[in-house]
Length: 84
Image (cartoon, rainbow, N blue to C red; front, side, top):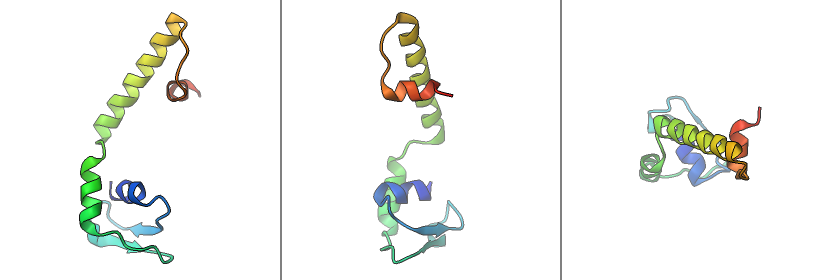
C-alpha cells in the first residue's frame, strides 16, 4: 500500500520499502526527493482497499458481459477485463 501511494504522488519515484506497512522502512534512491510521511499516509487513506478493487473489477466484468449480450459497444476499460 505504501508503494502504491508513493507512485500515485510521484510516478517517477525510485525507492525501496522493506515493509509495506512501515513508513520508516522507505529508502529513497537515485536522488528521488523524499515525500513527507504525512503526504503518503493521506494518499494511502484515499486509495481503495484490495476488497474495493476486486469488487470494482467484478462490476466492470459484469458490465462488459451485459453489453456483449445486448450487442452494445464496450468501453476500453471493459474490453480490457475480457481480453486474455
